[in-house]
Image 1 (cartoon, rainbow, N blue to C red):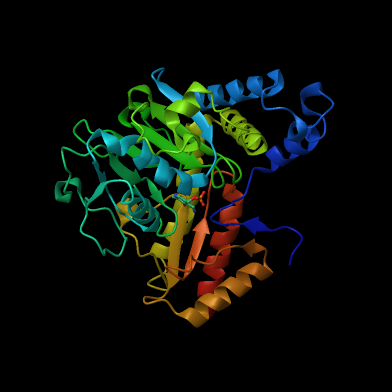
Image 2: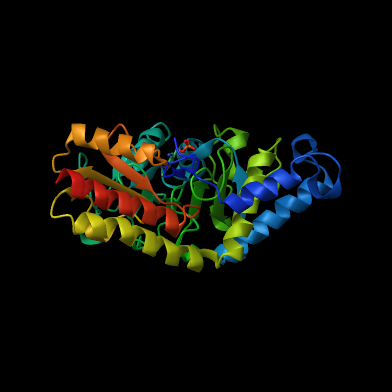
Length: 364
Ligand code: PMP
């Protein structure tokens, strides 16, 4: 393995190098307290201040309107798969799920435990695109419409906000939050596990419009009850403080680097570098996702169509020997996947692009 590696893992994913420097400096003496945040009370002024500070960074970065609450919860994305129906489905007893990949499918499956789930798209698709909204079967009586704005496994990303005709829109943004500007006011709930674009596993950022609080089913565990957590300002119990702190330091890094607009500019540059090579490879590389739904965060591709397993293995082996790591596609889809989240630099993606070109020249 070369001394420098470039991590293209889908998550837990690369954190900005600068953030590691900050964390190292602060690890044993947090803001002059002479103790680590790891051994600080969650009810201390030190932590309360940090809690507010991070809420404010989120607010500034996404321009979150005042009628939204910002929560830091545990349980990951999977926890929210349950929390969403537990908190919202009581409104009408049913919910619309737009299944565009494995993560929204998992969320729909979880929701079925708590109410009726209407599949907006015909089931069994290949998850290589997002059908036009004119083909969606939306139920005007749904408690909410659920989407996953970026399917991490299939590399399918929404480039539009669906019009749900007033039904609250709930979005899992685990793998593309803070990668571009969004209009928060178009969403009822946004959530994101931190371990891809904004930190490390353990905390989920949840942003909720206030009128959607207070509708939880009686069986909803307190720890998943958004209203209870909002009332307690995300300190209902001992929160995953260190993960929250890391998320805060990553978000401050985003802010120092041009905010979400800066991230979006880089994301477009990085995604083009990879997709252009695929497009210009005369079929040597193959990207299965339709152009208008191609993710700027996760680029899955095959060598040949159908993929050539042996050549893909060779590709991954060669990549590792150059320090380009964690490029293996998800086991559900196979092939190769380059995850190019905010912390992955343009230079790193250029290194990958160079390798892709050389590999093609050698094997085509
Ligand atoms: N949603 C998306 C889009 C994901 O990529 C993932 C994890 N890869 C999850 C949800 C599940 O998150 P967790 O592992 O934190 O439960």
